[in-house]
Image 1 (cartoon, rainbow, N blue to C red):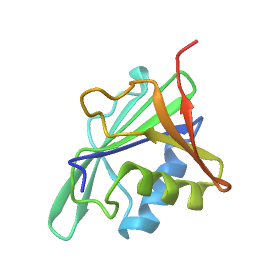
Image 2 (cartoon, one colour; image 1 turned 135 degrees about the vertical axis):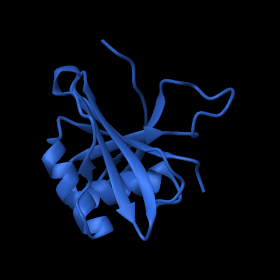
Image 3 (cartoon, helix red, strand yellow; image 1 turned 180 degrees about the vertical axis):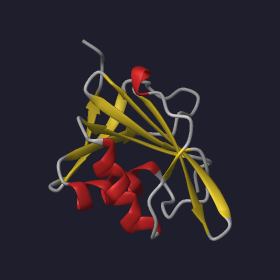
Image 4 (tube, one colour; image 1 turned 30 degrees about the horizontal axis):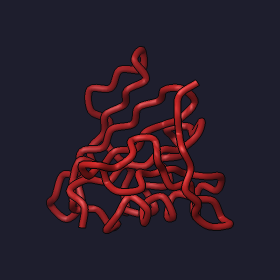
Length: 124
């Protein structure tokens, strides 16, 4: 199990992400000190007495969805990306190795309804 979960969704409305998470956790994420100006939205999920911090950051046409907790329903980023695509459609990306030493920082997994492929993700 990973210490946190992070996936990336292209041009996804934060409200759609929150609706998806409502179906997963049984309740919508609660907003906490968000800053629309910086495209940073902070939430928390209260699940069975456990607080899971959630951060949505929109930049460059993608939204990072970061759960700063190991207490999620997903064992890996890839599991979360698959769940997001199953509910939201489209595609999602996640790291190929969980940011381990020696990993290529531009190597990601891209998930679609057709499966998973490795992509090199570089800005520009």
